[in-house]
Amino acid sequence: MHVRLSASWTDPRGTVWAVGDTVDVDAVTLAELEEKGMVEQPAGSGSTETTTTTTTPPKKTDPSKIGPGPSAPPADTKSD
Image (cartoon, rainbow, N blue to C red):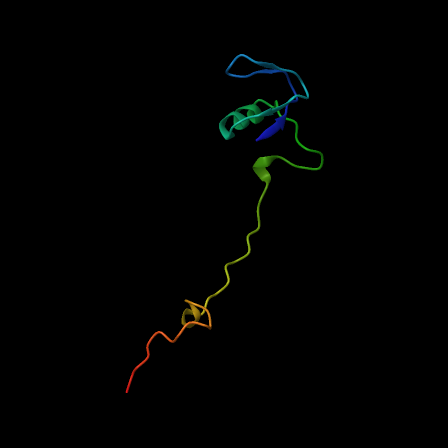
């Protein structure tokens, strides 16, 4: 994930990053940087801790319609 730094930071490899630099970090490093207040929040966004997501409930399925499409032969055919 790319983030913009709001403070100078030295990564675990020893590279020094300046304020405003954009760096690619993993989720653990991102959490550490956010905890220290070293990551800029995009304009208009709140804290990531208060962000909620809304999910759409799954569609109900009709068990009699599960399987191949209309071009398939019936599953149970009896020959007389």
